[in-house]
Length: 304
Image (cartoon, rainbow, N blue to C red; front, side):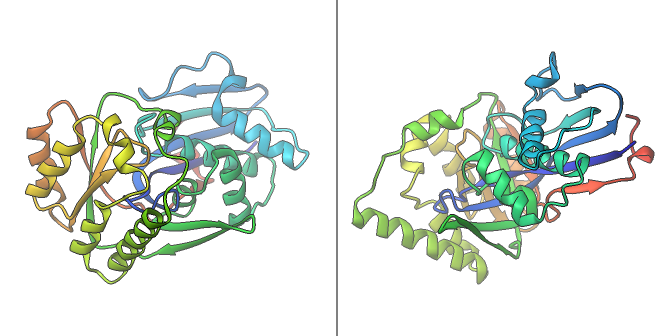
């Protein structure tokens, strides 16, 4: 009887102008404790997850089943206990984490021996784009592009920055945030948006974090259109800048926003922003370097 644990980090897409291309993993995690048994049983152990009434309606199970079927396999029955500290519909990649957990669940239960490239492709097929699934899989900051139907990616070294997230109590569905975006940009606007993204990334890689933060806040692809959907969008950016944040952006489609600040100053920024926005969960986060992990020794970690 197999017994294992899968953990997948949260993620934040875009970093401002890196629209649908740049993502970073964050140290909040979705965790599955899995044990084979004679029937299906799924239990959610998190305030962020709804109780399971029918295992076939569970999103992670559905992804795992689809993945198994791609290889003409049938999922063995098992008990899955799910923990998560990733809030749903907040722009922290909860869907991508669940997708990658489902892919890995099938990989482990059906002995698929999937490569990382296959996992990334499957995750992208289910999620629609790779900007969240890539960091959820690999950890760190990952830049992706789809070229000739192939997913190309590069993982870059994590910058020496602290990350502070401002998580509101309200949800914002990705579909809603997508609907406000224009179908096209003029050539002039597209060129300016692309240049901003290029300079932001180059600044990160060369350690010019002040310029990187400035470029983060100059996005033309999505933030100007989504700003009206994000509670306290301008005031959060303004107050974070007062507290010496390099840049503050929408996390994914929102409504969470995140700031990047010099290493060691995250707690100070979080304390200041908590006083200004008491209705928010203000969290100091780290860039997760591990990505998706599988542990086969769960018997000593948690009772299943």
